[in-house]
Image (cartoon, rainbow, N blue to C red):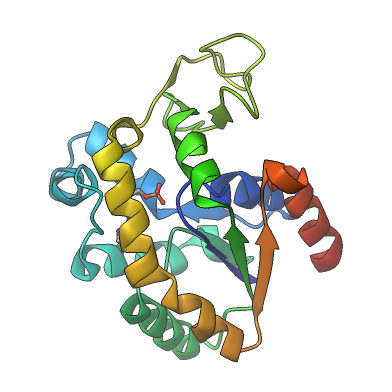
Length: 220
Ligand code: AMP
């Protein structure tokens, strides 16, 4: 099954994708995590990607698309894949369709998470991630705090704030980029009949975990 996570930064795509992955065994590919790992390891890909990510801009398609295709063609995607952070532009969505069609596959489900903007900013500012690149668990100091402050429940490594979550300029730029470049994908997938929109908000007391539980019930 090929699942795509759509939604602005801070809506909980990683949390929902992680839960579905744990319950179904379908692997999760976060393009943001792959970039951050490469940035930490100072690989040529990381050095190039950092020029865009640190400013809240998208990494160009000639870097992003081949990287994703590599994962789609790997063992990781043998039972399908949950794409968290890809596609993010119409060009990427069209390219993905082309690549999947060539392989006799298609996008089965697009989960579109919607959260009010004020809540998004607050969630991004209170987001903490595990510094252990193979763990990458995500927390929120208000909504989903770790048992011990600053320490990952899963692996005991220190929790850190993502660099692009520290600057309000980068946060605003990312949200603007989302509205301009990624939001049009909602209609694209709606027309294909694969879109499932879910509100994730403390306002209605519905967070990522509840949304993910409902989705898992429906797809298993
Ligand atoms: P994320 O962890 O999904 O918020 O991604 C962090 C950053 O990585 C984004 O702000 C982009 O700069 C970059 N990025 C992640 N996925 C993509 C993509 N599909 N296309 C271009 N840039 C991406």
